[in-house]
Length: 318
Image (cartoon, rainbow, N blue to C red; front, side, top):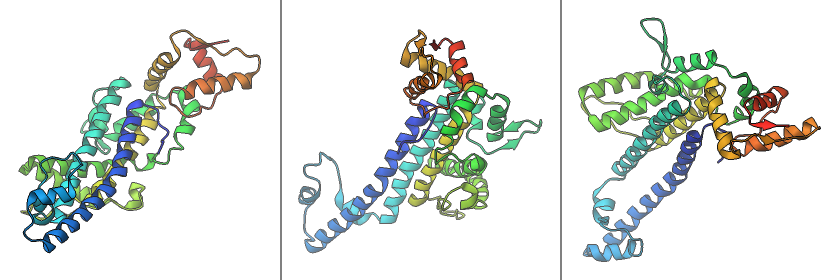
């Protein structure tokens, strides 16, 4: 699945999440089938030894140290699903956190954006926007007329672009992030933050998230360790993908994105202006469009002002 995105870290995260989606359910199904096969064989041959068991199911795989009897008979399927869910939860949270840091660096955004990209919108005691509200304010206050007119329409055709759902998507992110923190730390403070995040999350609907269904969660029970849902964490992966796509496309509309575009152009086409000489404006536009697409960007809307901007920045000449 190729998604129209502006920043290279966004493309990398989208690719990684897509690879994970392709891996999850076939792997879960394989574990489920292995459980039944091992249980069936042991039921038929109760005295079978572990080396023979490994020879039946593991030989030739290169896997070492597997304990099939413990994994398939002594461990419940529910517990294994929760373990799988933990791996994915940690992966998705880490991907998004790293993405926030990378795009803040690449676009030379204020350092506060790393945190603001991870929280729903709010207003500080001093009356300043915080969380994603600070990001949307930054986008509104720093528009790039050039990139907006040339690329936004194409980027906005991305099926994951969800500008009207950003705040609720980040409330969802906070719930799963606090769940991750709680699974790692388990402190009273972590439980308290998770409880608050869960209250905000359960008020959301599939429609408010822009999804076909709200990612499943297992409700907290007092005195019981929090548990992740495998199905819910996979749904959380879709939420992270939508956050990355939406925020990438929004930030691509700003003046912060212009130096990134200029740098990528020079890396791809060299530091000298590229000749696009043609007395025919449509042919010149077609040439510019090809040069832009070589940057890994969608086909731009090539306007006279965009051509003039490229020329002013010594990227083309004619």
